[in-house]
Length: 347
Image (cartoon, rainbow, N blue to C red; front, side, top):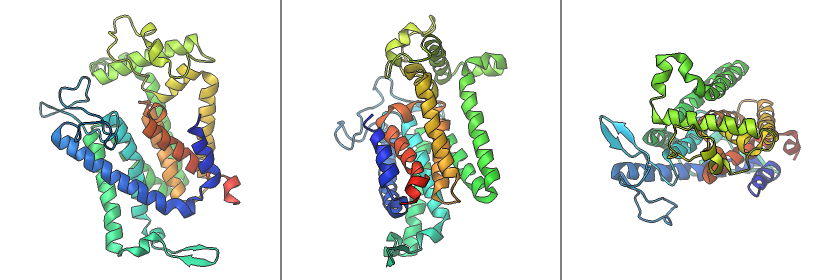
């Protein structure tokens, strides 16, 4: 509940046209630091430091139980974690800021104009540095965000980067048609996430997917979520109680070695908090979309695409709802989106 006040504060107090340069600086340097740390972890195949206190990096190496792994040319490798609990979370985090860098890189005229406030011309932070340094830094952030996402080997994060980039250019050059196409693709991905339990209907092709541990674990969690929803449709099983109740709903043949929330944010909200909270969640997203779509092309398109990315990623994972870093990032996106409502536009 306390973090919801962050949304309210941003909604009513943040003047995005004045604070945008600060957001750029903060998140750009943050991306550079996280990716450098992630690359060092990838090279070392373990955490760089040996305690939890230094920058919040968790301790791990090749012997750590349940550490994430990927196979490259027959060799098992540990993806980059940075300061996150899982590489997927790191990848999702970077995918959001990749679109930020892409926008600022392709709208250089905005970056080189002066800001006028109270009839006083104030120099944009961009005027403090030569143009080649400015552009070089934005390019660096863009490249590092992409490279960092690749080192996480998170397929959905990479998909979010690719789709987000396509959405951006389609909207930029086709306007409303691009917006409609982006919404349609996102809706298709969203609906597809609820059909994992029906992969067997695709014959041998679908069954081959179920041989992947990442898929069949998600399927078992999704089956359990559906059962919780059927038995507790109104109020759910209680906030943060999904994993507590999971053992009562998993298929009998499933050994309890993957006790995690269902990897679908919307099913998780429904299962834990019931239908009314889920409808409230959809209402917040609708309000954000309505606010952003009422604006012309500009930074609102970045927030619009970020929300689409969060829906895509949230359809196959839960970290924007359950993990502190990405939860705050989601709330920040919602708050910045709501600053475009008529209430704040009059201020």
